Amino acid sequence: MPVFKIKHLTHYTYEAPVRDSANQIVLYPIKDEYQKVIRHELNISHHPEVEIFKDYYGNEVGIFTQHEPHHELKIFSGSCVETTARALPTDELPPAVQWQLLDDIKYDVAYLDYLKQEMFDQAALLRDTSLGLKQTTDTPYNTAVRCCDYVYTQFEYIKGVTTVDSTLEEILELKAGVCQDFAHVLTAMLRFIQIPARYVSGYICPNKNGMRGEGATHAWAEVYIPEYGWLGIDPTNNCIANENHVRLAVGRNFSDCSPVKGVYSGGSGHTLEVTVSVGYADDDHFDSDPFTAPRQAVKPAPVSDQPVKNSYQRHLEDIMQQQQQQQQQ
Image 1 (cartoon, rainbow, N blue to C red):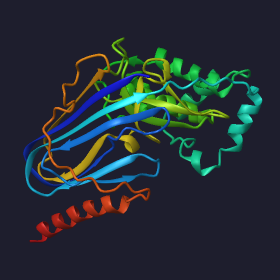
Image 2: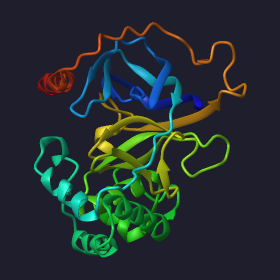
Image 3: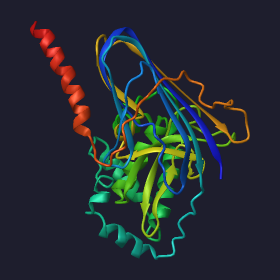
Image 4: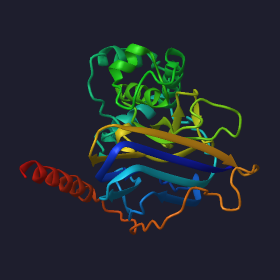
């Protein structure tokens, strides 16, 4: 069972002082039978108090505010995670039975969000392509793997040609992008075939073998296989996402899983730098104290199973009210 030591630093630098920033972070590794979090430490500049809750999709989410003027914001997350390989689907049930099982759950609340695909200009073309890849003898697992191979072979991995806001139309037009784009295309294809598919954010830890997506946050898809459960599939590397992938969050798309996002009052100009590095159990990536970023007292609130979406909205509403008051003065 591999052990990965991950450093993730997000650094915002503002052209002019900003204030009243409200931020949301999804930087807490998922804890389950296939992923054990040995240690996780969060360090944020300016010493905010972080309120932690679980969102609709079961992800741990933190929110915090910065009211004082500041020129920069640093968010450091250090994780030590042990992963366990999961056996692949055996596909013992006949294909027709598996497809019927998927049809039986298509109106279940647990899968609705992962089957509904928003329409876009080239949706019909991508739907036809997806359905054309499905063969009569295929199981859902076979079909998902074939779609993964299609994205891997038909789209070129090029950094910088897209952004986190790029639409499916833009990605399909370019036939290129990075892991987030590949994951978006694959989830759309699988949903058109009526296989539940969700977006996953996290890290790829290839144990020094070298894979696309190293040195940054990574993204892939998970598909629901009848009588098996959720299976990770990585179209960026055309492989099953297993013990070398560390999961942070799942959701419908990037917006649900974005590691860091927020709003603030002040000038719009800013730069963002994100660095990710991975160490292993057999190297000297971490010293005696593995988390070398500057420490501060971060006081997380107890994790609640109840979503506190309104709490985050309150922060945004407070900022809007303050801006309105300033405009009236």
